[in-house]
Figure 1: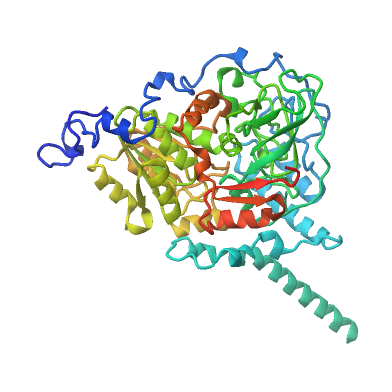
Figure 2: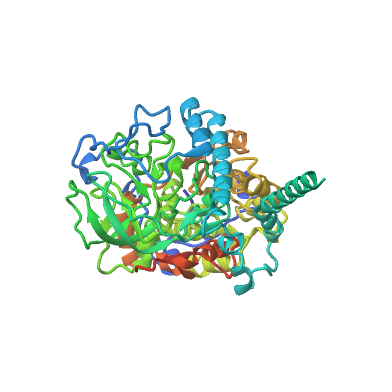
Length: 204
Length: 379
């Protein structure tokens, strides 16, 4: 709480307030703040704020008309955290596990709890395997991945974005093309070296 | 939209979602938004983000279909949908912790269910699409009041509610000095909300000129550009008579700038779960015995937080994903009275077909982008 009688921040003798026992003083009185800020103080009472108290037992106001929800069909075999007693009664069905990335992710869920770093690092590894598998599969379709259109990088030119004048984050923005394009360049280089090796081997 | 790997998205045709649980609804999306936390998915920082996943946890729309046990909604209702998926009946929901529901996320117990936010939050496709499956339709969605602007409604589904919740977590008392890290949508509403709770002084910290300008004009707060100071912590100590702030609200999250090395280690090279800069600044800037409220989004992988300083300073650390629907009745009043002005933050509106550009512009903070909205073609 602050002393509202003197709209000043410093203590009486110019010693910073942290070093003396004085109450900090408000720069503006509540009346001044109320005049300047729309709605100042309308939620002043901490006990009359929506998230007070943190735990407020009120099961009748949620709209739920069940003690335990109906169980969604299809839970058999679905991955779950080992910290859960069962697959939850509702669950997402988007992008079910599949292929090598699915095997990595399923192992992460089965083997490690959420408290183990291995759980999360395996899931990240599964993400990268999933991405590369999807990229490769896309080249066998009529809609191959296109890093130019999919990164939206052309908006750099429509918004004069590349200027970023005076911004400290421009330094790490320079890394983005390397992160996005680097693996593609490396993969193209590896493919080129591999094909060239095969050609030389069979032409020798 | 669908995720195609870090920094890559595309628009593609997917099957229309179907009723999978008796209390499901299918909502035809009319307006969606990109949240700052979506960028963590986009940058590949959230574990178990699968190729083909549709992002989007801020959306409003029309009820297109309902499951057999739905009682509170009808086809054709215009609804706003909290970003939390929650059952309304578990131990947590029955005590108001809707964001911590235990009945909707089979993949993890440490976080509840969230639309379009990876399988770590349940594996539900999100609302940056034409249609979306909404579980527990009797519990989450609310009919949009006639008087409410669509852009206010969509922002109340997460960003605005999270800013308001962040100010509450700070337990602000009359006259308190409140520092808000981050002048993005959550930080801007947190600053507005701090005044409603009686703050005597509100200081917003960022480094993007257009966001700091928005903080001055929209929230009436003082602003500090951390790029203009050798050490923002020292500057804030000076500004608060060497006491520090009574309350600090961290509204930045896992990709905080402020240290190129820390940012690159986390956001670019994934060597830690997130960039802890804003969180560590918050710990440094709070006065001893003060409160740090964390509403910036972080994933489950560890990172280098100065926990010892938080301990030694006797700080109260408060945080959670926002139980959105719990905030709404009061927030509706504040929006109607003009005390909170979410739609003032909207800077860009993109058709769904241009989602890749929208993410790039928002991610790189191009063109003064503060809050981009997405308009599905069906709308």
